[in-house]
Structures are given as C-alpha cells and as structure tokens.
Amino acid sequence: MATSNTDKPVVIIIGAGLTGLLAAQGLKQNGFRAIVFEREEGIDARPREWTMLVHWAMPIFQRLVPKDILEDLKDAFCNPYLHFNAEMETLPCYNGVTGELLFSSPTPGARRVSRRRLRALLAHGVDIRWNMTLKSFSRTETGLKVEFEDGQTIDADYLLGADGTSSKVREIAVGAEKAQPQGSGFLFATGLNQYRDVEKNEAIAAKHPVAALMMGTSSVGGIGVLSVEEPGDKSTWSTFWVKIWRGEPVDLRGQEALEYIKTETAPLRDEFQSAIDWTPSDSYVGINEMKYWIPVPWENYGGRVTLAGDAAHPMLIYRGQGFQHSITDVDNYVNALVQLHAAAGGDVSREDVMGTYDNEVVKRGANAVEQSLCEAEKSLDIDTVKQMLMATRGHGK
Image 1 (tube, rainbow, N blue to C red):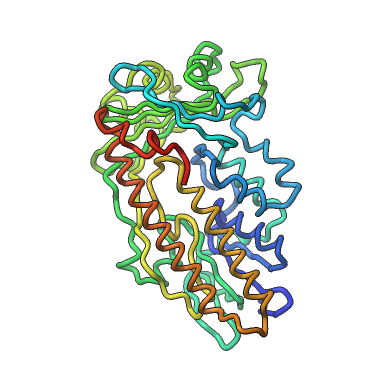
Image 2: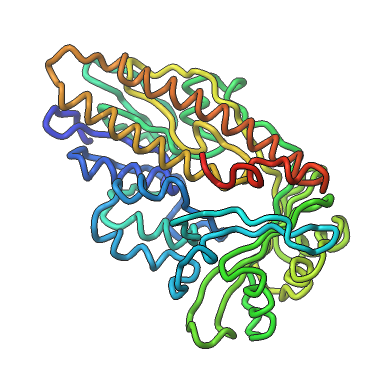
C-alpha cells in the first residue's frame, strides 16, 4: 500500500490512455509520484487504432514530457520521413459533390501521430498497474482511500480521472445519471489498410501526403497515411480511411462493418470511396456512434479529485480539438499541483486552487463540446461547410 507523504505526493491516475500517461509524465517531471491504474490487461490489449493531429497544443505537449520522449517522438509520427513545410502542414478539404478543393486549413507545426505508437512512447518509465478496475474512493484525514474491484486499496493525496468517455471517476463525482455520455447520432467508421500496392497508396497520398478530408454530402470522408515502413517503397505503407454519417447507432467490427458501410451509407467519391472499396477482407474496420458529455461541476473531495481529457469533456472529432484540450487539461493540472506544493504551509487553499482548475475545465470543455456538435451538423451540407470553424478559423483554439 502506497501512503501519502509531503515530500513526494502520491497521485493516482485512473486510465492509461494518452491523457493519463501524459499526466503521469508531467507529474513525474515535477516531483510527484504518479501511479496509473488501467482496467485493460496491457498496452496492446485494445486492437483499435486511429490517428490524431497534434497542432496548437504541441508546445504544451513538449514541455510536459522528458527529453528522451521528445527525442523519440518521430517514432509516433504517421510519416516521419516527410519534409515538413507550409504545404505539408495543412489539412485540405475536398467538395463531396464536385471533388474540387474547398479549402485548406493551415496547421503550422502540427504532426499527425499514431495513437497506438504515441501511447507506447508515453508509457516509458511510468508505473502502470494493469487489470485494475476502480470501485470507489473516499476522503480520509490525510487524503484519499481508493478501492479497486479486486479488493485492493491504496492511499493517495490526489486522484485524477482520465478514464475516457464512460468515466467511472466522473460517475462517482457527479452521480450516475448526470455522468452518462450522450449519443450524438453521428456514426464514425475507420479502416486500416495494408494494400501492398504502390498505385493505391500513391493515390491516397496524392490527395495529401499526411491526410485529407471530403465534406458536403450526407457522409464525411477522410484518408491518409498511417505508417511508413520504407520511405522509398510505397508498397510497404499503411493507410487509413474514416467515414462519418448520421444514422441509427451500431457497433460493428471487421467484414460486417465493411459490408454495412458499403450497403447502408451513401458513397463518397474519388479516392475517398476507392480507399473503402479497396479494403482487404482481413483489414481492421470498426463502426461506433460518437458520444459526448457537456461538462457540469463535479464534487472534488476537498480539491483532491478531478477529471481531465475525455473523462471531463468527450467531444466529436471535428477540428481535432479533443486531444488539444486534453493536453491543456494536463498542463493546467500539473501547474495547479505544483502551485499547491510550492506554497505548502502558506496561505494557498487546495479547495481554491483546484476549484479554479475545475471551473476552467468545465467552461472551456463545454464550449469545445458544443462547437464539435455544431461542426458536425454543418459538415453534411455543401451550403454550410464553408461556415464551419474549420473553414473560417482553421484548427486554432
């Protein structure tokens, strides 16, 4: 059993996703003992993979992680061999009706990463306890007692919920009914392909060497490069596609998911549809409904319990804002704890400092979630696509 101490406060993090692991790295950098608890059995337990763009939060990310992770960050890039310039650092969007370019959203300094590879990188040096499911937590005279489903308990100074869209920490902190994520009515499908075919991979990369979008009809499409084994041999490249549409919720995998997309959703055009049609039968394909939760204030147990990332504000994927806000949460959380412990014995109140953190996350997160819902509605009609924040303000905050 770990115990609380003033020299090295213990922070329990629930969830070994990107938010939880980044928080552990940032806390370790600043003298805290961070222990991550994850209900999955290991780092490779989840077969699902996707890519994400790290853009306006990249400078924040860089100051949260140690030098050795920054030095290896290229290992997580979808294509680390690109010469990044203004053209590479854009996200083009094509017209779903005509196929012409609608607009290009500048993403200066951004890099598209593999979620799986970035997660593995952020796990380096972190104390992760696998196969541990949170049951409850309660206040003690000196901190918190955290209990897990297997009966184990651990004493800690703080607890951070980074356990995703269906967060158990959120459920305890706000109540089961208020904590329930809401279905958006928008379905998200992704496919990961190894075509082993130079022409097919070149066709995907020709739309943009990193990733490209298509909007303006009843389905949104996306294609891009997932990984590059040999930069000079495009037959070794892996690619991805995504498709978004409004429909009845389904949760499908594999060939069943692929057949559903082909028969039950409106086709895209050009390479965006070809990427789906070319998908081999053994590729990973998945469909699920995107869910959201507009944050409301939670009980923070005297400033000792709070939320970050998708546990605090799960949102739709538009403009790639979710991970940027997760990174911001982590930075603000680390800074709050540093402020508290730098002023130990002074006039700084834990309730005040952590209350300020909570209030900012709720306000910023609610705005971002609502923006993502609005962006989704506008993306399906060619007359409203150019009103989207993606078109008018790009990928900024």
